[in-house]
Structure formats: C-alpha cells, structure tokens
Length: 278
Ligand code: SF4
Image (cartoon, protein in one colour):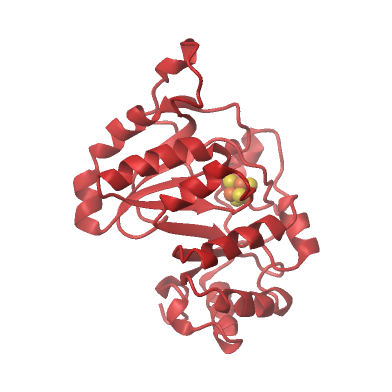
C-alpha cells in the first residue's frame, strides 16, 4: 500500500447539504487521491484513498485514515471527472484505477458504483484491502463482481500475532480469500516484512503453504516495514507500537523471499522487487 500523501484535488460533495440519501446516490468519504501511482497494481494508477479502517495495524502507514469522520465527501461523478484526465496515462501503461484506504470495503456501495463506471469505460479496477468484511453484505459481493484485481494484505498467519498486530482476528480475511479463490478473482498477496515479527519461520512457513493453495493468486509482494508512516502517528499524539523496531532492508526481504520459495511458494509468483539479485 502506498502512503497517502495529502488532500490535493478533493472538493466538497454537493450532497452534503441536501436531504438525498447516500444509499441512492453513493458518496465516498475520500482522504486523498494520487494521480500517477506506481505501487498499487499494474501500470500507472489513479489511486483513491478512503477514510475509515476497522483494523489498527501496528505498522500502519496511513494512520490518519483510521477515522471515518475525516476527509471529504465526494460523489462518483466528482471522482470520475478527476480520474478521466489521467485516462491516457492509464491506457498507455496498462494501468487503471485503484481504491485503497483505510479500508475500502467499509464504503463498498460507493466503490462498486465507481468500479461499475470504470468497467463501462474499459478501465481496469483494483481494490487494495485487508479483506476484513462480511461477505453477507450484498454491497461487498457486488463490488467484487466489478473488481479486476484484489491486492490482499495478509497481516500474520498466527491468530494471536494477527490480533496483536491488527486488533482483529484473521478469520474474516481467510473467508474473503476463499471467496476470491472460489470466484477466480485474480489477487496479489501483500505481506509486510517486519524484522523479528513477520519474517520468522513460524510465520513464513504456513504463509508459503497457504498462498500456494490459492489458485487465483498471480503475484506475491513482500513489502519492507518502514518508518515513513510514523510522523502521522506522532501528529495524532500517538506512538507507533513498532517505534522501537528497526526498518526492514533489502536483505530482510530477499531472505524472506528465499525462505518462501524453499518452503513451496512457486518462485514465479514473487514480485521481481523481492528477489535477492535485484
Ligand atoms: S488495514 Fe492496517 S495498514 Fe491498512 S489502513 Fe487499516 S490499519 Fe492501516
């Protein structure tokens, strides 16, 4: 997941002052947009970061997206008008639109409506998510029907570690991953490599087996834990629980990649960025 940088280009939703129901004309609570993202899916991406997240990841880069009350309300039309300006770059690069967060599944009706518009125009859609949502919500499955690629973060394999790192249990994400596999929805798996915490054999060995069992996974990205998000914690009067943990380097990522392959993960799935000889 990219670091949401600012609130540029976000304008006020005209529905804010009206009595129209948001369920009939979906509005999104938008934190910010990134117009030429290169980290969240293939090609150049128009990335929309949404407000609100039910997780509290200890390593969160976007700590300022947790609250549902921040950001700006925007209609699909408003977001659409902005992203259309970048369509030539998306098309030339094999890119598209990515919705990230926060947790975009919290605003599934809005994202589904936006992705439906993208599909009508032939624009590729990607959803950057923790998968922490109930599949009993029609809006969530409607959204997945409009999603070309899911960037699914797996936080930790061990339940206790998952709870400690995120504040929530892993079962909803596992059910979400199973749904993606059953419906053959392409997915990239993302794992943050935190030295001494997620790069241990106890985490990586079951991770290799689990990811290898998901036939819809087309890529595995290992993302180094960094300190780039810590100023956001500080600005909110908070302290990152991992403030005393060092950032991960290329060698940590390469070591984890090698371990995963040695324990059964097909090497072709690993993002080239993770490989030892980069
Ligand atoms: S899922 Fe975790 S890392 Fe992503 S925005 Fe929420 S708290 Fe931050």
